[in-house]
Length: 565
Image (cartoon, rainbow, N blue to C red; front, side):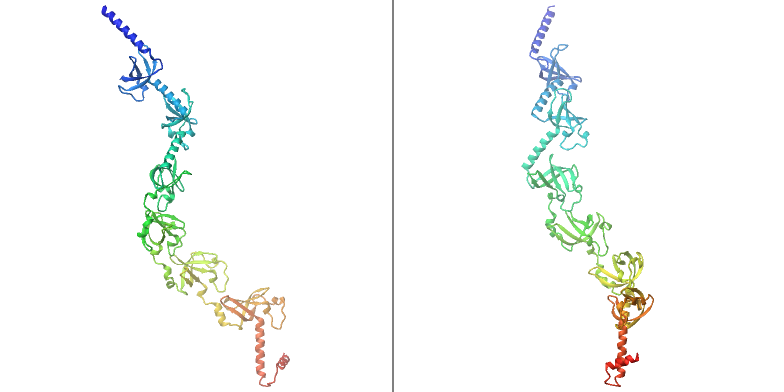
């Protein structure tokens, strides 16, 4: 009985001491405890004051170890069973509240996580059940194309407006934090680097003139001309989006905040020792890298490309598009025709590796050579006739006939027709060959001139009567003109009614007063013919009467002549 009384007194004393120990703490107070034990359901924490509290394990993101220090909030210092009731979650919330308040007042960046997409932006988890709203425009420094891409991302935010409740009334901005970091990075970059330094960046985007490189939230330009020492057509052939690259700083403009970077300057310029490896006349075997309307680019070696102009691709083929004979990637042989190191240009030729057929063209096509070849093209002024592969001769419309006036080449031939021609002219220096059909026969104008020299008479058929004279067709199909003033005799008076006496188809004789084969001009005259006849007759008469009377005068002759008439 005495022992029982002693035990009761001892328990009362302990209870009294326990209550006295709790007298110094208040409900809601944050205290630091030590983990003394843990199981699958609870973590037991010695908060001092001769008391332990137990905390459900789900209040911990990561379970502590025995001996770890933990901040907890006093929920009830006199629990149901006399034990103290504590909460880590409420301690965290209270601590987080103070942190968020201080961050909002000082605009100090605070850690948060994009939780989910909501109307107009995002719900952001700020910790300890605090939620913030981040407008879509403040989620990044660039336009967010795919809002879902940020979900789950943890980063720092600046609190624009703080609300201590659990409702979503706090407004945060990740953009402001990023802009601060970018500004700091940019300042540090401009203050620390100099031209020639090697910097690292990530390929951000492409343009037609190059690529933008992210150097830490701000961009540098990698121009297309600075990607390679050789010719660059597509920037994407040299760098890929998202690729981390090492580049050399070649220009920096602090005032305008512009940065120029170079990939090609990471290597030695191959043009510096070009002349030690190549000479004019060298033949190179290399791939075609680019085809344009004016020629093809050929990579002689990495960083050095030469241009084979369209005119240097073939001696004979009329190439209008190099793509018709070459493809990108084709390996070709070319001769170095020249180079300009200052402009970093090399001129190449493909045709120089084959014999120029124009060098011996005069041997194969001598003037006067008669050929039978196919018409390949008709033009307004004539026709092109294929003589051999890549070489055409031209048949002008004026070279079809000596006498006929052909106005349309299709009246004579069509494309695909095989015709007989004669080589009339060869000009290797101009790469021209003239052909003729009319030269296959003798020149009727030359023949006519031989048979009907000046002042001879010719008979022909009237082919046309005009108000200025009469056209007469004579031997060889040649037409001559008798002007209306030359239709009457020397003693007759002219009037326009004279023309009424002449009809198409009538025969007429006249004198040749001018014949010019080169200009194909024939002038005839009835007047001169009559005058010539009169002079001839008079001369004959004078010769017959001279022996009878040496004193016979011109007046006597005229008188005698009149008596005869």
